[in-house]
Length: 538
Image (tube, rainbow, N blue to C red; front, side, top):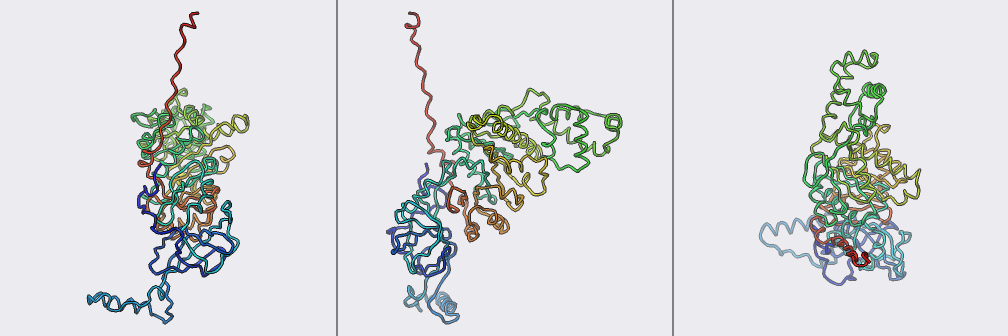
């Protein structure tokens, strides 16, 4: 376990007594608060502070959303003139020639906050804000007891430490593993820590010893080396690769297990081309797409069209379809042998609660989606069949999530929902204990309805205001005032939105390599007792 402050950019806790006054409240309403602080009080966006109501004994938890300057001097332009005078002194080398008298009274800082809720006087309950603290109440730094209510809501898949501004608090932040089935979104621009977060989350799943499963489709080959270093990898990680890699199982998918819908998800087809696929499927009447190999070998397409399809398909449409068929049949991960496929093995790994990594690096994007579509459909069909046919068996199945990098490729509004298994998973997977984990740099490209199905958000730094706006509108927690905080997040800092938490929780994600060094290894298996040979002879 990382110690607080171990992550990138961490700073020590502010020195001094924890109940020292940081400011005094003077405005606004039940949901918003404004307090005045000393001119040198160091306040940060996202900092968590406590308003102490001495009269009721309540402790209100505030989040700083903006900090501005304030002055008691009401003469217009006074602050600008003072700044100008000091600037001239600096230019002349006479700094301090015009000291600002009584600066601690005449100038100050104003912090705008959102009230997250308040602790009951006995500290056992955290309630939504429905009342105002007494005006001019003290604002102080939180005490450890102020976050005790969070510890029971952070779940068993921990990803980092609670963050307050730029400091870390010794409260682990995560999500309940069961909420993987209600769908997860990981959003960040390049370099903000998406991959590190996913590695930490996958590591947490491994340590849960079979309670949950992950199917990670990795198009860039960036997870294999990192996840294999996890202490639980030997027991809880299975890796399949589309190319020959050490320590992996060959990814081989049978044509007979693929479907026309997998093809329609992976490739963009015109309506005539889709009709050609259905015509070919009806003509060959073979299992799955096993007919694709025969069709790829047809030399005289014009004669095949006239003799076998009675001219119902245009020749140029057949030519496009055959070019794609030949490419698919020629892939190293595609087998024409119906007995050769990883589908059943992957399902068994997930039933055993493992992290299954599908390394599809080296494949084109359409082939990556083809493999992902096939495996996702297998998982969803298996879990839904168990739900309908064997409820008791379904109860014993682990919660599983399918992890998709660059999820906008299959969850955009332009994708055909009729054939695409991923929108079906987003709409129906929850009741079957199968979720989707969508990772993207551009949430604005996701279909609005499908984005609204994601009940957990991990929001890292996002520079695009449209992306931030989209997430504010779809989040299950109020993010309306957090645009500046999201915009200023540093790599590894994030907001965690989950229905188990009472607000969007700021976190500092563990640095994976440092974190796994402190993860306990699985216990060694007990040696079997040697048989009592003498007793057996007697």
